[in-house]
Length: 463
Ligand SMILES: [Zn+2]
Image (cartoon, rainbow, N blue to C red; front, side):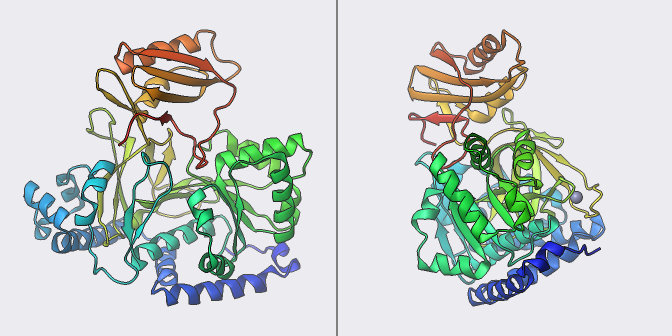
């Protein structure tokens, strides 16, 4: 049912939205992207009976496997090795024949994984981050349009239409550095704008609030930590964040970090609902909250599995997320280990879509701790180990040199008195090393320059 929205007409936003939406369509067509056609398909398929969605996935999986075999030397080699021919794929169970794909595999064999003649706009996408965290990969017009359409569908669930004013409260330095004319034009066409969500100071918080009040976004999108920092500074500087709601703000959409309790903090401060989304540059849009705060999975474009991060055995919906991207034939992503801890759920939500759901249960893994015995311990397993300690709010391992690991620990106020000792003892157990472990209790762990909350900050490991 369509809901009336008096705010939209009172501000004259409807006309602007339609114009921006139209310009955006033209822009996408010029780039050879079928974004709006795909959005139309996704808008219909989300309500299909589950078996129809499974049929769509199987047909896409078959076509992905066929083109990977035909055009990507790496994948042909993998399939030959496991004895799987595209014609053998009769059900989604065939997926299990593929080995897990890691970031290291992609870094090592990337050029052999690509179908360079897949279609228009095949190019390498450079990711941001330190050398340790970087993972460059190939994309194309087709891949991008699927991701953009899925994102639009998610935004639509929470009342944000294509062409609505969206403020990117963003923190990726590379994105800001390359904000050249083309980018500005694109943003203008889409009705998007940028505010740096990185390194917010009291002065920048005031400027930010002024900018948003003048531009009147319908939606602001950014990292959780950018919003929580802004809320803290706004309280300190006595800035009123609820004014944006009067100026047309309908939703805040977060990404990339655990939202948790911050949802309420941000929502209370702005007086609008806060929705979460989960995307990976190498895996596309994985999930997006609906208006009932269920994070729905983008099932038509993905096959999702979970594995135990230690043993890599398949688990029943809880564990490290493994992604197969059905809509990326340019650089097939098949059974990719994301390093993210999640719980997958079924399709039952009052909003009525037939899509599954996902809950994030841990941070992102980017790096490892390296012990002097030569063991590499992933951040995921550190989270797994320490989540048993009650009252543990945030944890970050820092390693400047081999032989020493420093842990920053932020605890809740009601944490048991021995929480620090328990963290230390679990870490000692997990690292299984004679290296020294130094613990420092802090009130807050600051985000990385990229804006992300890192589990491990290392000058040692280079994945
Ligand atoms: Zn829902």
